[in-house]
Length: 252
Image (cartoon, rainbow, N blue to C red; front, side, top):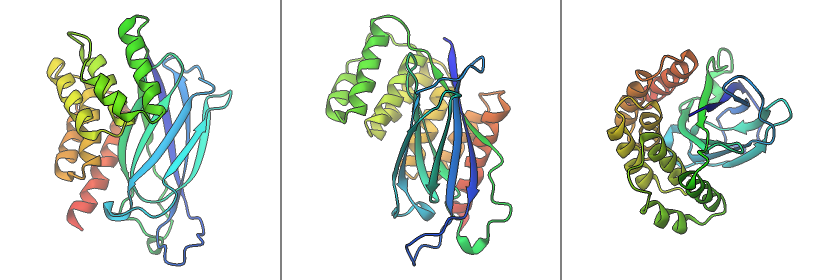
């Protein structure tokens, strides 16, 4: 299947806050959505949601962000606080792509802003939707998930078409994440990896679910396993950053 590339460039800036007790920096995130050949995808939707905050504890601040790409496939969102964030992007004709990442979870304003700019891009490669009933089925479920019909999505995902391949199971797992059913998503990603032990997408999904469950030891191992399944240097960079970020909370 052809894949679209969602390249997310993160840069850190310090932004004043009205909350006198806040001691955490804010992050501005820039990105673009393109095809595999570098063609921009205008009107693609980008959503971000914070699950946990500083030190993977309770989040305080704006939890939800959304935007659409411009004619050049670019988007810009600010200002995120440190924590664990779920990123997802959707473009017409492609399955939604999701990943959960720790973003500087132990960074405070008192540490200063010098050298805080992130040096990696978050690269997500969305699978093109097949033009068949199976593709239509998951496309419909993605729409239900976006519409808040989580119970309908969960029920339908229990009845997947027979003999799905790894890409299809991984796409179903990402839709389960959109419906905020982390356990079901994990099960689907594990099934996908069983179908194709080399699947980068399935391994990344498993790592994302461990992060959302705050099982940081398992998440670190899963991100490392994911990194071993790609030769893309941009993918390797953001996976290495996630491993390093998780290491800080494990040893604090």
